[in-house]
Length: 538
Image (cartoon, rainbow, N blue to C red; front, side, top):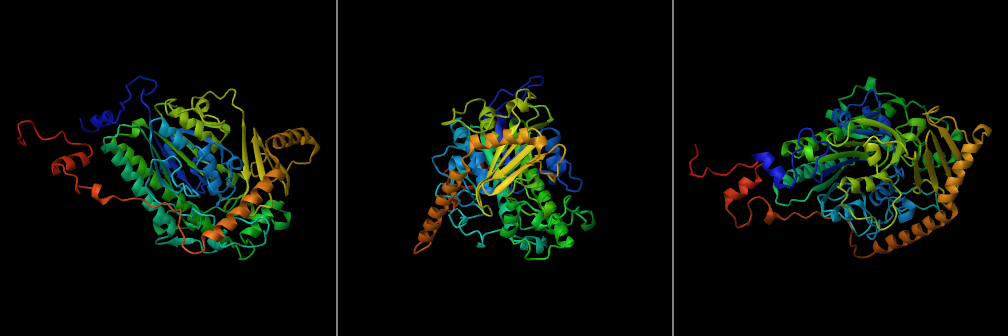
């Protein structure tokens, strides 16, 4: 009895041998990493990085080889993914932009579809709404919920305290503890614990659990056990060495100035240390993923749970001499995306272009079609045809926007088929053929041989964006938020940060007014069948 009984009690049935699809609404575990570049993963061909649990997930899952974020920076990428809208549509311009409570998210839709929605970890929500459709939130966040990190495009020469700096590279190395480790250890513990709780309680709703880790985000430091998984000699250097700043495109030069690229001597040893710590952080996230998968297996929930793994954006890791994100080069813009549900979808690799925007409609479809229709058209498309192997008719196109620090105006991206087109109000066009030039070294913009393709991309950009109007909207938003932040910093400050609740009176055997043996029996997983009917123990 035990585990099988409790699976049935939760409203799920074990898949019958020979059936094509489970007939019950699935649980969904969505594991998210922060700043994890797809090219840095063994799943996507990296020869050095060790991530065995992720590799196992990919082996029996659907792997998307051309998945992109829609903004290469944390908060806008996440708000866009959650809402199914490009950042400019909801004012999610930068890491201090408020995510409006009135914008429905996939958590709202899944909740209306009957799901128990649970969040553990980083989402970088800005504003007083720190739930955005999640019924439960298990941890606080790691970064501010207020407007303190608002960029200032009107004074680009000013370096603000929250900007990334090259100290993360200069000081890269092992550590005993860090802020990032403290946070992610808690996220993992709370998420694993909630899986066990979900298997033990009497709520028969399916669950959607989003566990979001802050690694391998800089600073480039990691615990010594993960640092020592890699030998210094095996750490590869960037495939594209540093390009002199005067030869870089204008946006890359602005980002280099923003992070103080020339302030320190970025030696080969420092580059290797930063990459080694980053690889160790990937192994750390892989271990946390393994803990969640083990919890699903231990509770008997693995068979009825779809597992999704993704990241909000990547990291340049020294490629071209650039670090962190904030650009549409592949290292920063391409992300891992794996959907693991072997009872539903045959393992395969998908070469079609997709983006994080596509997760909203996909999750609604995975919820057995029970989610309500969106209040407005979504930018993304359901990945169900690709998950089912029906690629015919899929339009190979994704869009992206960057509106954060280091930019002098909006920067937008269109990836269609083999080409990527990037242009901005203050950035001349870049056109790359990613099949012939995967390292993006040969800008085809302005060449007669590619004039037709460039005109087609220009038309798409003109039809979708008014870059001058978007710049005005961003500047107005920045002014408003800077003024509001100055004001709320005066006098008594009422923070928006999420404070997790811990109700001690409802934990363990505290004040419940029931038989102690019943409490202990219910907390045990698998449950015992209770005392023998004759009261004898043997």
